[in-house]
Length: 371
Image (cartoon, rainbow, N blue to C red; front, side):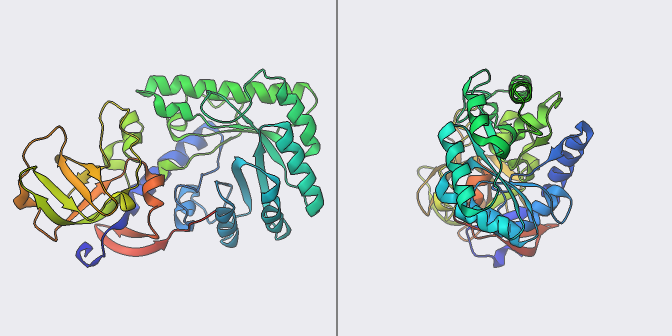
C-alpha cells in the first residue's frame, strides 16, 4: 500500500507512538507529577490526545498558532513556553476571552513589566512562570541570582511559579550523565521556588522538561509538572543518548529511489533536506547517522546505510564509512524509509502524517504550520 503514496511522505507508526506515550505516562504517574506534553513536536491533535491518554489536558506550546489550534480542539490549559513580548499579548488575550487558561514565561524585569502592562491594557490576566537557567543552555535566570526576586516583584500577582528546560541533557553520552543533568534541573527550580516562597511570593508551579531527563531522572521531589515532546516519536538523537532503541522511532520519511552513482556506490532518493531537514544532531554523538538511517519499505534498517549527504530534493545514500552497495537491491522506483535525526525538525517539513497500522496506511492526520 505504500507504493500508492507520493514521495517524499511522512510516515507515523501508530503502534510505536502509542507504546512510547504509554510508557511515559506510566513513568510520570508513578512519580506523582503532572504530564504537560509539548505539542510542538506533533503539531497535531490526535498525537496530543495519545500523549495524554485523554481527549484534552494540560499542554505546552511554542507558538500562538499551536495555542489557537489546540484551543479549537478542546484544550484549555496551555503554557506558552517561549519568552513573552508585549506584541504577542493581543492574540493570547483573545484566547483568554474565549475561555483559555494561558500561562507564559519571562526571565527579566523588562519582560515582566511588558507582560503586566499589556495584559492590563487588554483587560485580561495572563500569568507567568519565571524561566530558570538550570544548565547554561539557553535563556533564564540562574539559581541564586537576585534578579529572581526582582522579576517576581514586577510580576506581582501574575506570578505562578518557575520552569526550566534541561537542554544540556542532549550533550550527554549516556544515562548516568543524563541523571546528573536531571538532578541539577530539579534542584535548580526547586531551590528557586523555595526562594520565592521564602520572600512571600506564591509559586505553586515547579515545571521541568526534556525527554532525556524525564526518562532517567531518579527523583521529581518538589516538581509539579514535566513538559516533554519528542518522546512521542523518538529519533536518532534520542537513540544515540540511550533514551530509546532505534526500533522505538515512530516516524520515518518514505522516499523513492531515483538514481544510482555506480562508481561512488551511491543510491539517490527524492528525500533531500526539504523532506528530512538540515538537522545533523547525531554529528556530535559517538555514531554519526548523517541525515538519517536508511530502512527498507517495512521499516527495517538496511545494513549500515545512511543518508550521507542531502541537497534540496536529493538524498545521497551510502554505506557509513564507505564501501560497496548492491545497487540491484535498490531498483529505480523502489521505496526506502529514512529515520530522522530530530523528529521535530523532520516532521516540520511535512503537511501531514500517513498513519500506519500493521504496515498499512490507516489514516491521514494533519499537521499545522506557522507562528
